[in-house]
Structure formats: structure tokens, C-alpha cells
Length: 225
Image 1 (cartoon, rainbow, N blue to C red):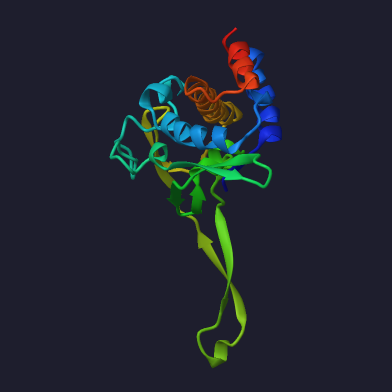
Image 2 (image 1 turned 45 degrees about the vertical axis):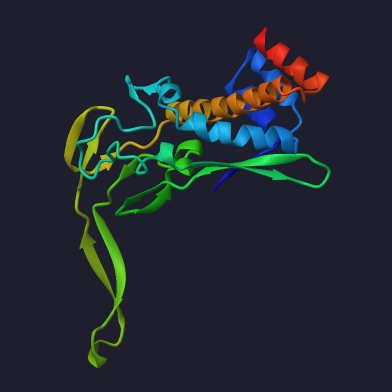
């Protein structure tokens, strides 16, 4: 589900994720001029390996598998990873103010279902998971003599998986950990840092082209202090 980022949303998140002079950028009104310049820069920033390299977790590269090799692990083939699927779309309402729709189309698949990876990392999604010892399902009888519902007990198979942040395989496991709060926080820094980058540079480009307002100039001056 894409993020809907307007001035109020950005203000709340920046106060949570960042501190100090970065807050002044929340005073920028989202005009069509600012948005149309910022959105492509945000997409570019989120896919920039130099920016991505700044984010580590458990002493490993976060949000990109740079060590392929596990079962069904993602490789560095372009187009097959989250960094290649970001989109930032401007939406301008009547009166000239608007918002950014930011999201990612990358999905992950498992025996438990299909999830949008962006949603799972941004919001507390994957938690710790333990395989139940048994699963019970209802099943109808196969013929007229068995025209009733009966319980079928199914033994659930253990999991085999590769955990990149520990660099090892786990076999016949009955449980595994989910995304931790620290990883969710790191992902927010990654996302909102790119948003701020896009807004800052959009303002800078507008000013350098001779079209900036005094308010825009003041915001950039405050951000650079």
C-alpha cells in the first residue's frame, strides 16, 4: 500500500525519525513545482547503491541481498530486487498543493502467502513465527455414504531456510524470528532520508533556475546551518 505523504504526514515522521535542522524542511508547501522535481529524485535516491551502502543491519547490507546463495535467495540481477521497484508519484489537488504517493511493487512469496515487501518493512508486519505441531481442517466425505464433514489432522513439515544476517542455513526449524523494531526504524531512515533529499534538491534546482521564492531560499539556508 503506497504511502500518502503530505505536509502533515512528513512533519510527524521527520520529528520521529530525524532531529535537528532537518525539521525545517517540513515547512515547505508541496506545490506542483516542488513535487514534480522531487519525485524522480526520490526514486533515483532509493535506487542509488551509494546511498543504500549507508544502511547496515547486524553488520550486513540492509535492504539488498549482496550475498546471494541461499535457497531461493534473490540475486543482484537488475529488476529483481526492491531497489528497482520504487515509485514516487506526485498528486496535485485544486489550489496547487499536493502530496507524494510512494511505494514499491516488490512481493515476497512463501508457503504462508504473498506479501508486499515495502509494507512489511515499513509497518510492523513479519513477526516471529512458530510452526504448529498439527493442523486440523474440515473435509467432506468422498461419496454418498460419507456425506458429512470430518476433521483431518495434518502434520506440518518443519522449515528449511537461509538467514543472510547470520550467514547460515537452518534445517528442520520449527520457528524463525521476524523483522525486529530496529530494522523497521532503519527502513524508515532509508525512506524518509530519500524524501528529504528529493525535496531539498528540488528546491535547489528551482532556486538555481531563478524561480525560487524567498521562503524556499530560507528553508535551504536553515537546512544547511
